[in-house]
Amino acid sequence: MSTTQTAERRYADFYRHQAKSPTLRGIYQDVYGDDYPAELEPFGFVTRTDLDRIAGLLDPPRGGLLVDIGCGRGGPGVAVAQARGARLLGLDVVAAAVEGAATLATRLGLPDAEFRKGSFTETGLPDSVAEAVLSIDALWMVWNKPAALAEVARILRPGARLVLTTWEPAYLDHSRMLTRAGLVVDSREETPHWKERQLAVYAAVLAETEALSRELGPGAEVIFEEARDTPPVLAETPRILLAAHRPG
Image 1 (cartoon, rainbow, N blue to C red):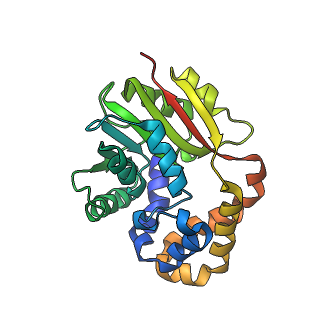
Image 2: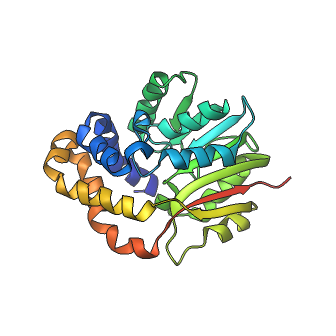
């Protein structure tokens, strides 16, 4: 089974039930407070502060194509597209996420946003089509990261930017991989307060296993596994925000 098929199988049930879990929403709201973009119904650790920073760094032209890779249910990409007046195309390997993204985008006031199945390494897009590429907390799940970043470089127009968030263990150098893909790294920074917030979310998830199992069904195991296994490695695996552009 390919890594794409594995990801789809693991996350499909979660995405089908995510919007029905008040417990999960409450956990993020309690940990992030006003910095939590609740209306976007995100899954993960993205904040309003992140989204403001990402929108400013990407700065696509009005009407330009913004591609959100690993879009999940689409909310963060919708927010950035609305902030900059861009056209949005969201790609995800999980069909249930893509279906939910279209519904959420309409509810958030961006009914013309498009969502389809696609991956970091196989976007299905022509060369030099994107005015900006966004990815939030998705690249860490990609096995062949050099191939993924080469694909991003291929679909970006000259001068257009990629902004992504991910986690960087000591054995990885995302800046070097971006450079080898033909992109110019503009900035690398840790996202604010990432570690204490992430640990607090995991602690709350493990304290609410009964309620989350009831609301998310078998899909809950995805977040239980992450909450159990991730804390020991966070000290040496910062959550970073990277911005790069295709020269030309």
